[in-house]
Image (cartoon, rainbow, N blue to C red; front, side, top):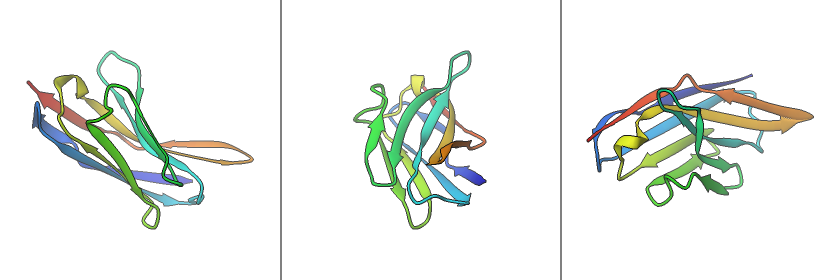
Length: 118
């Protein structure tokens, strides 16, 4: 089992910045994927960014150039630095953890609200 605890989020004006963090604990495989998804009201959950334990990253087109994902493998944490925030970034952001051992295992955080005012 893996537990995910998120921090950060809140209310910010358009153009501002926020930083999300997520700490994983439990049975942690060295090779894994951590990342962030988001879900706005009335919309499906969508990928924001992911980073594998080796450091390769993947971003949604809508956040490229504005968001940066990073991780600390020693602390099993992942961060999402969000700059130049726009009202359309308003959503609940969920931390995500995935690893494969005979089969795939996925875990989700409880979600943290990000609200960007215009």
